[in-house]
Image (cartoon, rainbow, N blue to C red; front, side, top):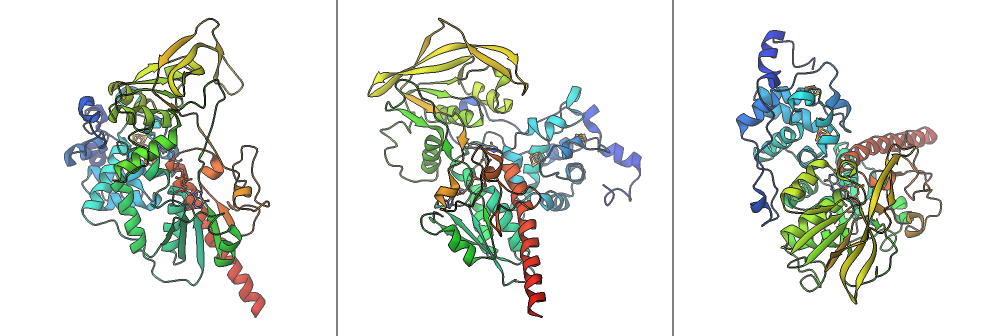
Length: 491
Ligand code: FAD
Ligand code: SF4
Ligand code: SF4
């Protein structure tokens, strides 16, 4: 705060800020559920400028801002709130973008109730400052007014880096390294840039144009994208290591967790990501093979989604928008114990999703095509060593849910990267994630770094950005150190 405060007295600042005692918390307007059900547009409207200003002024400018402590990027939240309250939006954008590669994306899809806003000190009793919405407002305004610039370095360096994966981890690293002047090459097996931000997360949470415009700007800044390139098949990791001075692996986690149960192979049972990817591709104007006739389109069908995380919420809400006859979420714990963001659960409820809490599937019924999920009730017991309440089956509690489509949203695991990359020396943890030195973010292979979900396991965009930015700093140090060692040796 030091740089902003000296010109004004504490009284003036208190007059402008600390408005939470006078002003109620107000989110940007949410579209009516009936309207939301009919399209894939984002559900929140933009803040009006005055509303953004007044909501930002509710911040009490804490000496120890817990919001910032609990933001994975340690964003300087009090400063950009104060600048917004003062109408100094360009400066607010500079502060917000200094620590975050994609503030407009985090403003939209971070689970703020678990991160910054959930830890805002005025949350208790007054309702937190609407930090995410203000962050989105600042950055959307910056885009509108042309303040967001392509990552162009002041000088070019001869060294190059190879980044595998154009998700948020890879992109955040690419931007940082390009700004330092490196020749940055990003390889991705998909045809578009963005990773799960483009093909996983639905449009009603994150409109695709928001991701696509970043892609365009990164290209303008000189970052080279090599798309439809599957590392391990089209090019080997060894080749990339030979081609570049350092390599970053940011390939995410995609292997859907499976369950074994009678009838699991029936037609109509699909993994969540196949379903969401098809819907996103459709939304991007592509023809998706088998979409209209198969389980990828929920129109007119009875849909059951199994799971209780954010991916399950994305599936139920997508099915509603596709015009499903009914949408039910089957989850083995209760509402209070759902892993997903409560905000998303409320949104789903508003949109007409039915929840079957404390229910677990035991079989799938049908002949060739699934017709019903056979489930039983669960009982919540005492917490275990991790603090999570354990569930046990309630005997003789069987029930059935009619289903033409069953979407399995049970979570994701990493694929076997040492095998896929034909690199047995690439060490993995017992969960299959890549093992890195957490100080340097380097794997056991010299010059090969890793970041994002492939290191953490399925996580959040904001953590992937944080990891990508940190990895970029470590890659820079590594390359510079190598260069100076070579220079000394040559003397
Ligand atoms: P990814 O985004 O998965 O990107 C990895 C990239 O690597 C992909 O583009 C992939 O094509 C590429 N790749 C993989 N293997 C290869 C290879 N061999 N060769 C070349 N390229 C390869 N997080 C939130 O914060 N908020 C949300 O609301 C949210 N919703 C989500 C909804 C869904 C349905 C899912 C699945 C996840 C959601 N997440 C959300 C989590 C978030 O998307 C991830 O944590 C984040 O995208 C991880 O970033 P990443 O860069 O590590 O990996
Ligand atoms: Fe909150 Fe996410 Fe923004 Fe951090 S990046 S301030 S956690 S919305
Ligand atoms: Fe402002 Fe809340 Fe952060 Fe305190 S915790 S600085 S009130 S946003």
